[in-house]
Amino acid sequence: MGEIKFNIVEEISVISESAKGWTKELNLISWNDREAKYDLRDWSPNKEKMGKGITLTKDELISLRDTLNKIKL
Figure 1 (cartoon, rainbow, N blue to C red):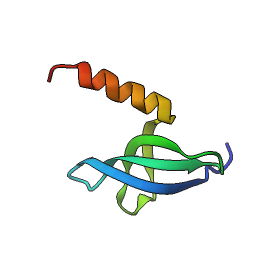
Figure 2: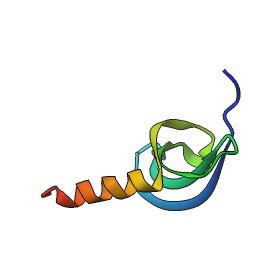
Figure 3: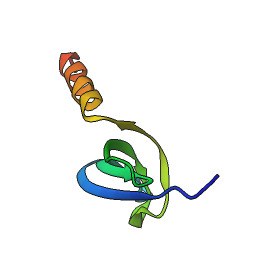
Figure 4: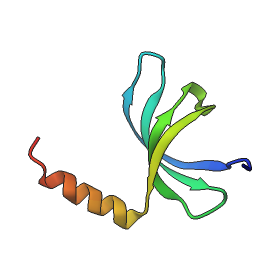
């Protein structure tokens, strides 16, 4: 598997932080020089490692927002 390149275009929000310093973040990221998409995943301190996450287009993020707004929490 080749090297994965990423560029964090915009840091939007830190959702949570673990006791070991990993953060769950929503960011706008360009993967492998492609168009930037919204990305939700865990990051190690200094962003040296990352966990599995999900990547969403703007339309998908809007749909997710609308769905979450319908949930009674």
